[in-house]
Amino acid sequence: MTTVDRRAGLEPTLDWPIPTDASAALHERASRVSPGGVQGEGRGARPYPLFMTQAQGSRIRDVDGNEFVDFHSSFGAVLLGHNDARVNTAARRAMDEHGVSFSAANPLEVELAERLVGMIPSADQVVFVGGLRQIHRMMRDHDARDQLARDQLARRASTELDQLARDQLARV
Image (cartoon, rainbow, N blue to C red; front, side, top):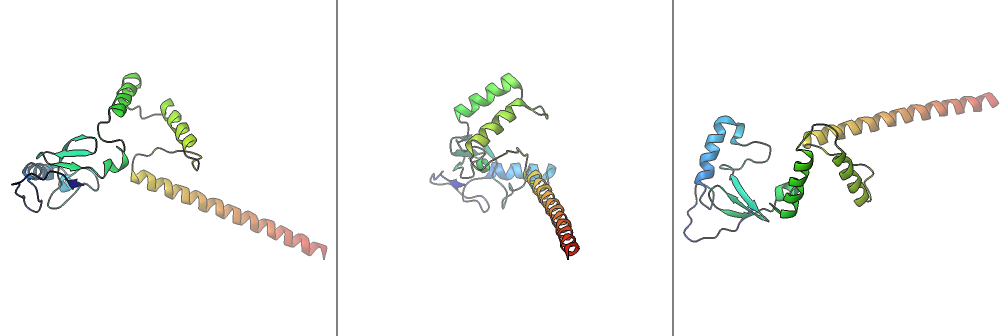
């Protein structure tokens, strides 16, 4: 993220080159009730994180009124920009028609998976995950299944080679 607020006369607070008194106060409050004063990994910063309160398009604004270009794009979640009217309309319509979250299988996830598989030539299947821990678990499970399959294939090949050798010896 890079600041785009270049108003003259701004005095830095602590190590930030812009006024951040409200973020400092929020971090102090948050530190009393949350480890590190933040929720989630990767949100911490020194001397404290800037607390964002508003976003539109590619710009985000902190609680002190400083405006930034959001190069993170919420780590890819808002590639069309924050508060894109088309995305908001579609999301509201889906929530109005279907609800928010069921914690169960849903026809819309099947439709989305079919669309993604149809759009991505190398994708045979799609898995929607909730975070890095789930991805790591899936990778471990996948690696374990691959290892099991390799072991089974090796045993099968060994058995078949043993049988072939016995057959060859029986002919001699």
